[in-house]
Length: 365
Image (cartoon, rainbow, N blue to C red):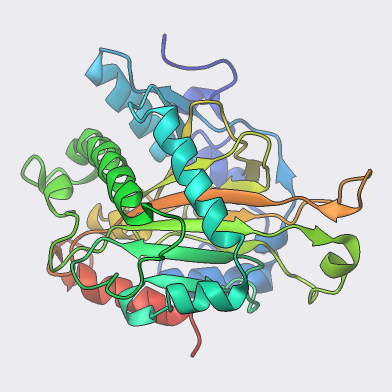
């Protein structure tokens, strides 16, 4: 297909994770592949099975060009990618590089401030999924805090009250504009996946369930900072520490913006596929990484499965002995709190209750 890049396994015949049958054949004997596991239990199982720490291999993550005028071909490519590894990169997506670079610069300016300043500027509130946190997220897959800090902006009318940072200047206006563009891209991806993912839905149901800045909004932009560390600092971390331990996301889809030259993101298909092969998701110039989340997995009755991913602690640079910095921006397309997730195999649940349960599993008071 003209929109498939060389080495990108867009269809079942072209990836080592090409089908559930092939993936199952690669599954290690100690992998927990029980379809009855809840998402949190699944993440906890990764520690005992060793899957969460397994080394990455070399298979390629699909790249899909959304600028292709053949919408059917684009939808086919997205479906192939989403039903195999569940993680892919989109190019030709319509978000200009200037907006992405400006949001990264705003993120850098915020994180370069002292810790006490950041905590005062945007106090974290788990119930609102908003604000600044520093090494507070404990992954069920590791039992340890991620070695990172983040600023979460949730697009709900009350969620950011008293949490918009005064520095950098224009942060609120810039972030609102960036979230609008991200929301439009995520909505397009959901719309292209919906006919096969949720065939019982009226067209547009998924996209319409996600709004920005209303009383029920849950879409979130997370600014992520993995700080540089000396070799001694990295060595002093508890054994088994990761910049982000293996996990699935809570949303329908995630858009992950990365900076070229900053590495560490790795992905693997959900163990319920039977596969546990990890691969690097390196930054692609002009590309945005996308993964399926738990909410869409539930909504689709498992036709799509959420993707496992993690951020590895890189080796120190030989010339300085320092672990390099990493920034990323994650836009989580999460349905409004009052949206009802209805599917055949599980009882209905509001998206608000669903997200709250996942927050409680990751943040300790």
